[in-house]
Length: 196
Image 1 (tube, rainbow, N blue to C red):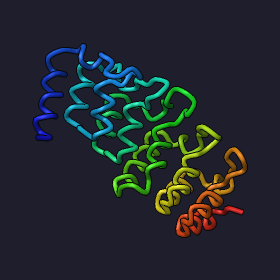
Image 2 (image 1 turned 45 degrees about the vertical axis):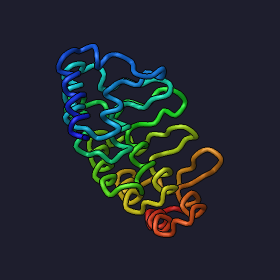
Image 3 (image 1 turned 135 degrees about the vertical axis):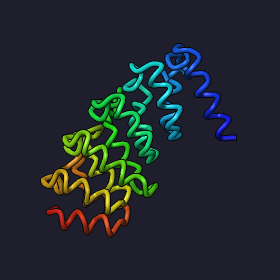
Image 4 (image 1 turned 180 degrees about the vertical axis):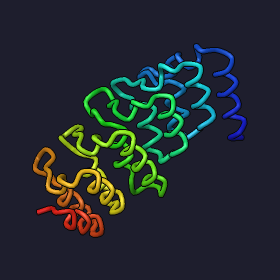
């Protein structure tokens, strides 16, 4: 059944460029967003071939296709999007969140084992993202600590060593966020990274 769905998306993308440009939702959700969020590499590849300009499409309510793929831990899809749009890792979501794809990956870091590979890949594509603040001045480190992913916290501290004691809005540090959620391993990594 899943193969049939993928084939339908592939057939539509091959038949016309308009399918990739047509908004499927009132919040500007494109077929590319759906395919990226579900990790459908073949569909993403064909949709990007049909409409390459959609690789960084966003709106007030929707993250970029790369952020959606990153949030789901879909490394193959992340690679496809970065190959088509190498600068996509530096494009924040629109609206009030202003999250980069690295924020999305860090915010889901505890969800799947594939997340660490995605975080590594996004850091390689855009190293400065580790220092980028999103809504409430939160760094990717804050999000990973709050989710309790000690491994992701370690990767982000390696990428941006001076961030261990950085404060988000309301004085929330990565250490405080990890402790509030009882994520002992993540808190220990933040302390090892130099948090005070």
